[in-house]
Image (cartoon, rainbow over all chains, first blue to last red; front, side, top):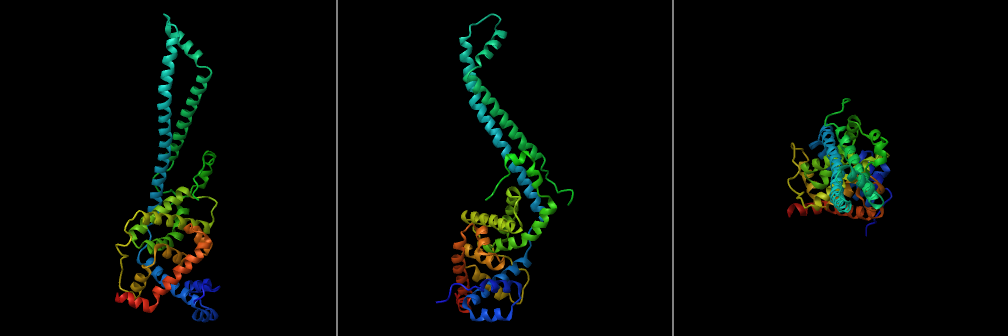
Length: 167
Length: 181
């Protein structure tokens, strides 16, 4: 059974990569089955690697850079959309609830002839206790969503789809 | 592993400072793109897929990169992203076997090279990954673990098996049998 490991296998691989073979190491690589295996595999892979690097090259950096900028903008837009969608969800919950609450409380208020000023006064006087907390939390949530969404939109606008001036 | 800039860093402008300008990116790209592409090409065998994954790798890196990474960590991080993307592509059952890498020109050792390539193609993607990272990129077990997401202890045994399999396949008698088949 062949041994599994040899302490010098990494040195053999390095020598195969660099092409610098100290005499002792070369002699060892010929006698040690693990190192012989390592050498054969490394040389085959390096041959493949050399061919790949000469046969074709990577796309230009500028192309990748622009694509990355485009995706960064898209990413920021998605984040902005998340907050605006959250705002819509908050509105879908709060608006019907606020409407129901207003209608139900309006019926309790006695109808007067000069109803407009009194309605305003009555409405504000009703907005106390739990209703005040709920209304305030709704307003804060809406403000948070608008702020965050706008923040990402501003960042998107500050990520231009063009090369840097220093290029 | 991936970390997006938090709201605090965004508000206090850390993200702005960490923004990579195009010139710096070009330096990083020139230093890392070619080995990364060779790795992708070696494992997935398709130049179009390799280019696509390479672009995606850098896009993700720019989007999620950490500012506290040194050169070695950046290299491992890029290989990690590329490996993950390649696994996703393999899992999505996209045929990565065809078309073959095109040959440009006729080299004197073309037959040998094609022979070696067809031999290496018989290895599984994971085995090709490990062998490439260890023997072409010269990564140690810890770096391979960081690049592949495997445990360092597993690397040792998996690499041993992959190397043994590759050596058996590369043995002259096995290659002769493969040619005859």
